[in-house]
Length: 536
Ligand code: G4P
Image 1 (cartoon, rainbow, N blue to C red):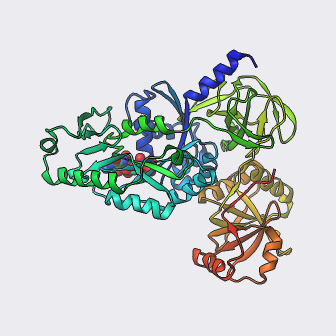
Image 2: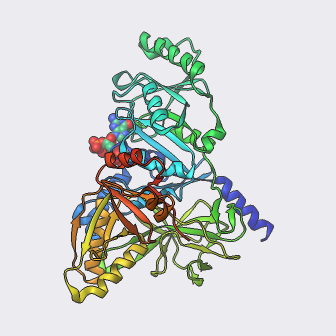
Image 3: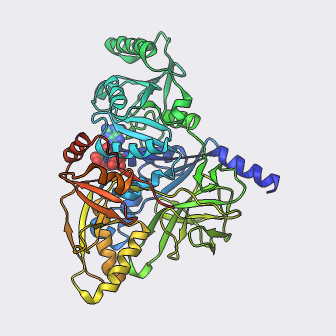
């Protein structure tokens, strides 16, 4: 590789930061995203992400099902530039469209922002997404939102994060009051206070009044003697017994820096963004069959982490989302598709901004590109130039909904088989089978309800097969470490149903958390896992 190209790639890596937001619906992800984009100058008036979304819903090229349900299935990647950094925000589908894609997106992220509602603390979806971040060991930056509303004690929230997630916390800033009494935040690193001023619904960048902690006007500016003394006490307490900031621990996902603010009123967002850029990891190495591959490896490589099908029969295009891991991507380049060994030319690459697709010519490690998928890509596939390599692939994540899928029309047997198998390969849903030979119907296993509906819809629209879905009474799946052998050793087990996944591995299905825990108590030697590694 020429020295110029090497310098170009190294520089691109140094300038790139990529992250995904993990949160529970309503914590303020859309609002925070809008405000971050505002600082990146990507949109001029916050609110336009939502406005655009609403507007788009009315246009005709929207997926039929999205129109019917009035929701967004499309996950987007937003890129913006702030203070010389190229920032990629990988959007994680939430709400009703929470699906395995939400987890998969995290496999393409170098950092995560954990967004928490100050009144609600840790909520279920956040905890599930955290597990994936933990598995990957990526840094997690916590933003506690909605400080303009009454909420829980900040110390109590830190404690919850430590106890429930096993993460050390470092309060990077500290709120002064909350709700009606919210006066601002104290930046512990700079030892400065940012005073909160309510702007017009946060539609513009909030102007910050910043004063030193030692400023004699402080007591007067806070307009509240109690708050002043509370702050002094809190600072003493944090300095005395709180954790010290440890960047290495942040980088390996053991400590989370915690920030407070209010996305809606646009307070604390820019400060958060600045520290995030200081502390976040630049695009890193990925493990492959050739060992860990650093982003500056001279050849181009990447992997598919998400496939998206347009369900409109008139525009039946597919987009494969690829995380660029190494080298430089160039439009029209020819790469090798690792799984099949075939050469493919990557024409029509796209970068995605909100719902709009923009053609691109180049991309670098940490970027995401969308390729029109001629049907050859599957989730986890590697593409590369140069020496053969294959990335580890994407694991199966714990499904929560199970349903057996029946084809009532025997003449459609072939289409049914083909459809189920292709949709599974595409990662639309996981497929499991009963151990009972008489029960041949596949069991669909999904993370969200929408996935099941999408599969039925697509089977009908693309394969012409109408199916019947019968919901099964399970909500938890666990893979058995050590496979069949380990399972046989423990003998008979109760309150669980054993099925097999597509790799013929045993999977235990439970009706509820209690049954799952009970098995752990009865057979402590049996190791279960909620994420199954992919077999290359
Ligand atoms: P989500 O994408 O995580 O689901 O959350 P979203 O941003 O849509 O926010 C959920 C609700 O919380 C919205 O109110 C939003 O305005 C509000 N919100 C977000 N950040 C803050 C904050 O810092 N302070 C306060 N007080 N509220 C916040 P909504 O009534 O559902 O929608 P809207 O009518 O405001 O759009």
